Amino acid sequence: MNPEEIIQAFLNVWETNPNDIFTTSGAIAGLEELNDMAIASATDSNTVFVDKLGKWCAQYPKLTDEIFAEAENQRKFKLKNNIPEPETAPKKPDKTLDNLYPKIPRSLRDRLPKS
Image (cartoon, rainbow, N blue to C red; front, side, top):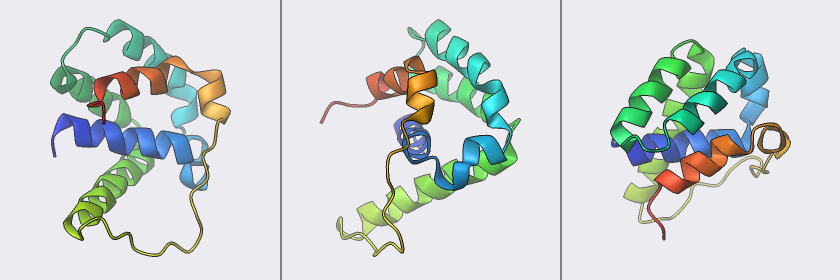
């Protein structure tokens, strides 16, 4: 996986917060650290940033699993000519984390190619 795919997967998990994963994985306690890292890493390459993000995520295995599952879903989606599989329930954006830590998603979005 390239760094942009990992960043996109993390951002998707961030925006949808499936099963309240940031709380259930315990990652909610480390969001201040992630926020500080995102700010301090503004000039780092995506590769360096993803390495730091990976080290942060390693503290939260359930969150890491969710991010990798999302990345795999993105790959499957691309391989199927952009025909999405039906979902049992649509993913709705959860803005709670955005409201608390707005610099994290902004930093992630800035790292992705503009479409």
